[in-house]
Amino acid sequence: MPRFRDLTGQKFGRFTAIETAGKTKNGQYKWSCECDCGETVVVQGGNLTSGASRSCGCLQRELTSKRSKTHGLRHHPLYMVHHMIKARCYNKRNKDYKHYGARGIEMCPEWKEDFQTFYDWAMANGYEEGLTVDRVNNDGPYEPSNCQLIGQAAQKRNTRRSRMLTYKGKTQCMAAWAREAGVHPENLLYRLSNGWSVEEALTGVRHRTCRR
Image (cartoon, rainbow, N blue to C red; front, side, top):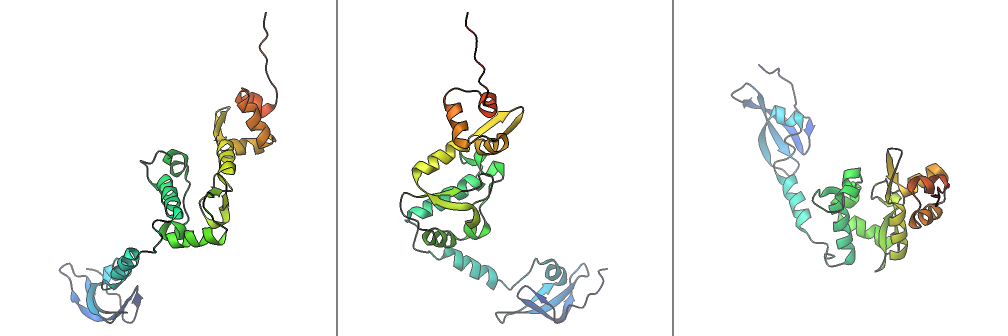
């Protein structure tokens, strides 16, 4: 038989336990609880202490109402940018998921759950049509401290630098290899673009085939 635990006066989410209200068939104590909204309901003690019951239902109704409210920006270019970032980070069916979500790239909770917060950050940082969201650390998340707004040309250069290279069984982005090898990213990109092997590009030693 479950041991009695006095919950009188204790707060559980929006519930405040008032007094016991009998037991369930398996002997668990039930409690009469007052919700912050004024409703009084009977809740099983185990559901209170485990966090399974946090309100009479008003909390869920408020959250649903909040989600249903439109911010009036559904047709703004940033709305699609926000949607695409979430898709490549969390939708396994997205063609770019393997380069983002599968590598552990995430979107900070503030941006993921609230487009308005993402929009406010972009506008405060000088967003205008034609600019894109770029991560400073290619292995880091989409969050204010790791993102900047840049033009399409710079985004393309950064995308080329972030291409994945494998050398001696180790795979990482071009920018990371450049730091590790002590090679300027532009030089590494130039070598690879001109037919150098990954080893040659990283070591700076070109192996030429002798012709007879």
